[in-house]
Image (cartoon, rainbow, N blue to C red; front, side):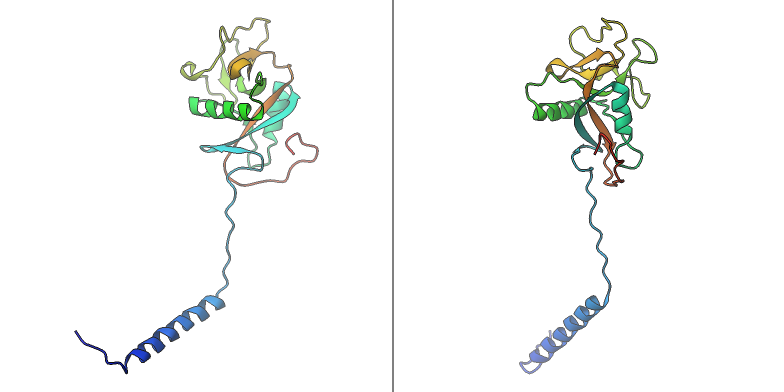
Length: 189
């Protein structure tokens, strides 16, 4: 092992200082473009796993709600929320309870049997898996006939109801962070 004498130490520090100044000069001469991280959800939406959800207080029919969600300000638009698993359903119930703990629900989500009575399907066309449904007691019952759309109801359970009824609604979009301009006069503004 070689030892350095005291006269060599200042020279090493000078070399290190020169190297640091050189690196600093190179950094200053480079053009750095920082990209801001996009938010995972549009403003007002709440993320759960790979989706973002938002409750809307406007009371409209099931089809109007589906159309409003499709106009969401993200690529590909959105859809009425599809709680296809217990975790997502629990998350949506927590959003409803945070809005109004004593609410009777009455929020549209993307489940219907409009194509064939008793054959419940999600907005994406997938069949309802009966193992994860959260129907209220004796639901769905089509008691008044034409109860072809699902909504959260009493105790935040699922109820079938007439699609022309005016309820609040929940939209779902993919969490991508890509925002598009809002259409003027949109319910989603």
